[in-house]
Length: 296
Image 1 (cartoon, rainbow, N blue to C red):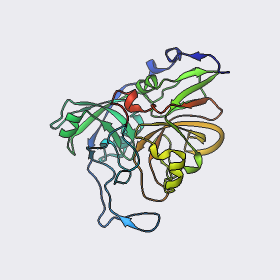
Image 2: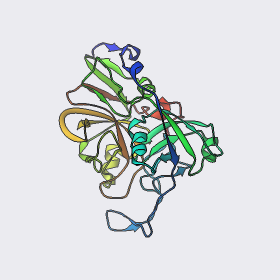
Image 3: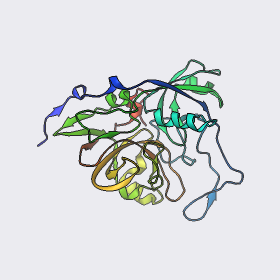
Image 4: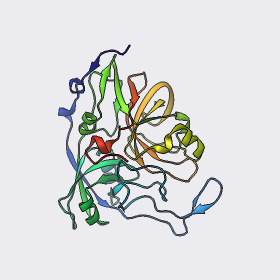
């Protein structure tokens, strides 16, 4: 029998102690090396669009599989590459759900929302602004969420979580654990590139080369913006196997044909000792949670 459910507003947060701070970056341009072929697992190679820049027809809530692209990023990709400290401030301080505003160019004044972090920060705007934004335009982000915590659940660590996103996710307390609705569960055995990276910074890719397995597990139905859960995944300082741990993550970029790569997931929550539980609800996507439109 399920224990009593605590309504989400009764979960005590430390959000009144969090600092709001401005960071900024420029809209990037796509980057393709001369003669760059991307290898399929069978040895064939191709040239495909992928990371950085302004992507017009791929949005948060769209499918993660099936694009003629590699690591395709939804929305607008921004960074500050002129200085390593500013680059890392943009990455480490920005959280999913933070507000962004265009401060130069034809779309000046347009407001959007942070939807992901890959090699760059990903921001989504409405269609009218999106069509006006150009590489080099400056975008400011009001960062809010670094240090987010639930005092009554100290064993749960939050990464890239803004209070805005947390309150939209429908998290509840149940029998001493946080209960999180997610769109799907991923088996830890398919997690690939990115396990070696700091979970505060950049994502981890699925190993999606076995297409039959992806279809059998239903993973090929994943959408950009889906909330996902991984059992036995400890994402406190990196991404490692730990029996009983649970991590909650966000799908932030599309599939890849490269071995060991596939759609990318960004860590949002992690607990080592069973502090997180979850249920599968297909509608658990941040496009819906953040009012960006209905997922595909």
